[in-house]
Image 1: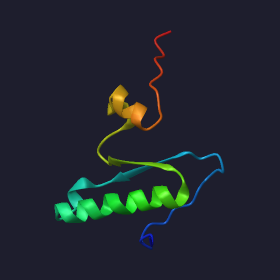
Image 2: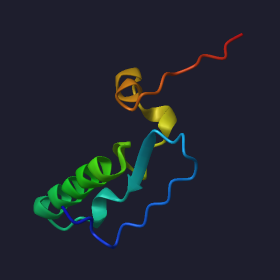
Image 3: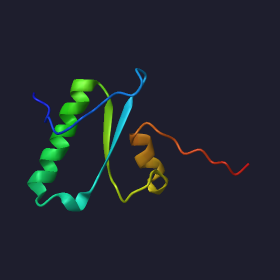
Length: 81
């Protein structure tokens, strides 16, 4: 499968395991376009061997639920001392 050349991915470190893509949900003009975007992300995941997650750019990592974080391979750390 050919990866869309409009995606430019550079692995910062060899130990990188996750790719979190922030995107603007409102930029998609149709559900088909949104679906194609996710298919491209799946292709990138397969090509790179990285786990890929897409998060709307309006969402911060702090807003994700513990379940969503777990899907990304992350865990919330409480610093309540």
